[in-house]
Length: 265
Ligand SMILES: C[S@@+](CC[C@H](N)C(=O)[O-])C[C@H]1O[C@@H](n2cnc3c(N)ncnc32)[C@H](O)[C@@H]1O
Image 1 (cartoon, rainbow, N blue to C red):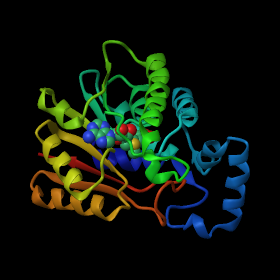
Image 2: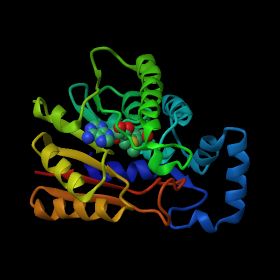
Image 3: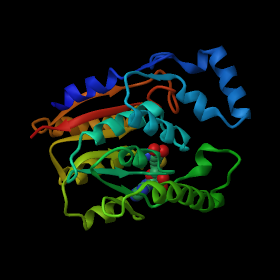
Image 4: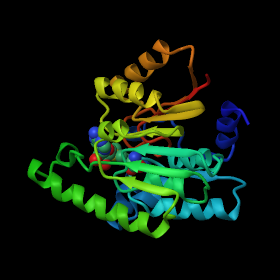
């Protein structure tokens, strides 16, 4: 199946109650409900309930159920898209995820799939930036918590010979890497320079017909760096689909926006 047809067929399997072009900050009823669910520790469940899945088989529903439990900086629709792309890969193909946090995007590639899955994270996240209750010195403790949380899921669901985790800076990882990637998901540092450099480095390892997913596409530096990379390499790369949302950060549809593109030659 062509990559574009694959994306279209994935989109046919779900719909949203609140659509990506609705600004949730202006949805008063939605916000009250979200606060209510947060009090009872069920905010993620509430966010996921915005996505209605259709015509899934039992294994796909099970996958959604497990993914919905995992703390994440994404959305269930993005997890589903990752899972459906990974599900199409063969047993010798590779899904490589840079930026794992608590494991959501990595587990999305592992559950109910046959491909090899490699995850890279150096647990360097800046937690105090988005949480005023934290100080810079709390970051290492928060990163350790995320690592332990991730490992509890990873160790439960991994297959020893197919699924690998590397605790390392992604540039160091690539300096020793010598395989080809079929599906690549980048979700680490999103500065313009790093976003562009990351795609340039990864390009050396991307196989023909590979799919690339970039997260936080609502952010101007991310969009600019990704589009600059695609236009510099327009003979090789083509956009499959851009999913933007009306507001930034965790929108219940596509979180902070994603773009999917392919290396066609
Ligand atoms: C936004 S989080 C990833 C969220 C994750 N994809 C999910 O599904 O919830 C970004 C992650 O990238 C990692 N990171 C940042 N810079 C990195 C680098 N240079 N090398 C490897 N990992 C990095 C951070 O430690 C953090 O866990």
